[in-house]
Image (tube, rainbow, N blue to C red; front, side, top):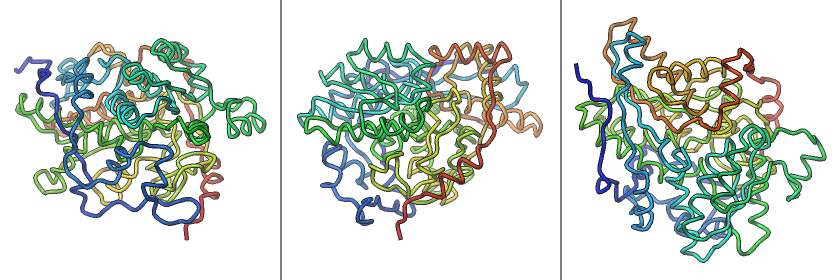
Length: 454
């Protein structure tokens, strides 16, 4: 029996380029539309919010994009991350499946988010921008952008979804330690925040609403840009460093996945893992590869949403994206997986789903924490509630292998640790964790108000 548990790469093996799936898509992505004209947006439309280098990356069809050396040097603080073989979980499940997981929780902020945060702050600084606004759900993105800002002396203002702001106070303290500022959203700092507070003073917030506040803030100041931690093409591009490293590590293990599993909220973590692999499915090298996207049953964007043009935010300040959506006005139930509480999804993931290259499933909160506890008691890692969704699906796929006797190889994209989610685990262990039904009526209402695009 192969008892090897960890697969390491040295620092010199950090990829020098990000992989751009747009070079290999069977059909190009639908265009991003201007909300006023309904026409495709151009660089001038995005320049008030993003540096030109990121705008170029957003639309590029070049297969490989160079990673700036200064960004790569900061990556050395935690990259390459480790690929693990989950021997103990396999034994507990009594499955013939081989389970591997790529663990992103060893970055200083504890998740995959710095892979793009550092790059985005760098490109903004290169353009002379010294202040950036953003939103965050569970806090991984906000803390990661503040982490990135600390290296380049860039001021960061974070609008954190209110329910998560109160559930996870130590995320705010991390942001402040790295020099950032964090306020709960909805906040009194913006017109969109004030409007929501007037309508519902106890609003738990949503990523869509926090995006509205951050975009509004950036749009009213010449010295400020906006930064997004998921969804957009350039964000997924930066995250492909995960999958590129994993491919090298699986070669060391003489393995290739039959199934890849990851959680999706906006989609950046999981896409960063699977995009270098989906290329093999597109070109016919691995036609039977299954790519399973896992989301919350309480915010089932891909499994229940419409594939349509919609705003990325509540107030309708962003361009229109073609994506699976639950409606930009939808406020998800306050599940602990704050990073998965988003009404939309990365256009790249939605496009690949439409083409039949990836699949999606939804999981309930109680079942995901059950899986997270089992993972902690076998592999030792206490995972983020977001990651628990992917662990649930990974365990279920391994149990199917037990039933069929198939020794499939399953690869789990493990997005980060849950060290700031102890209140959620406490509630689960005490039998007090709430579950949430599919909010059908709220979604119907939000979908009725999608923007008209002709």
